[in-house]
Amino acid sequence: MTALELAGRSRGVAVLLTLSGGFLDAFTYVGHGGVFANAMSGNIALLGINVASGDWTQAARHVPPLIAFAFSVCVVHMLGLATIARFVTRPALACLVLEIGFLALAASNLLSLPDFVLIPGITFVATLQTLSFTHVENVTYTSVMTTGNLRRATKRLLEGLIPRYDKAALHDASLLGAAGLCFLTGAVLGAYTTAAMMNNALWIAVLLLLSALTRMCQLSRSDYVRHS
Image (tube, rainbow, N blue to C red; front, side, top):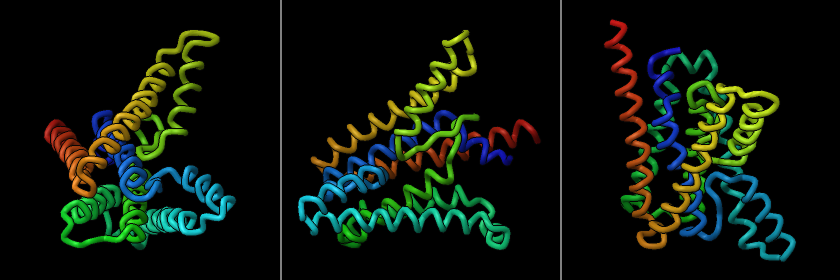
């Protein structure tokens, strides 16, 4: 594992990525018609509710993010193939830079992106993020959704207390619990700033992701210096 990949697993980077994940879900839901950027379970549930009530216009709004999510999974899979890996040697870094670039473009209002482009675009880049950064330390987590994190946090907490004290399990539970708290904090921040600033609020997400990128570079550089 390279120094950059190890840096991407640091707690500080995970905090910043998860804050941005919660932020983006709140941004699209509050500012763009009650559609989630990341929570596909929520989109599918709302799609079903809208279909049941005959609100086909609102139901249709939940479809593009689902397509973008599936497309993003395909892209990450392709980046892992040997033939492409020769050209994209740092796929996680490339995905993070792409996400920052897209969100900065949307925040700048240089192009007036309609919702049917903006929302799936955010879904696409955010899914790239969560599929590229899958661990905090040695614990599997997701940076743009929280259900799995909360389930694993509860499981590890119980394993740390019952039938006997397990320090490692409790440490894992604290990491996953912190991820859930960061997602909530990001959602609160996203909801508040989107209501006040609309698309300009995306600059906050850009700042969070730039901070994560900077932290990764700092950590990887210090590791290189330490071992050189």
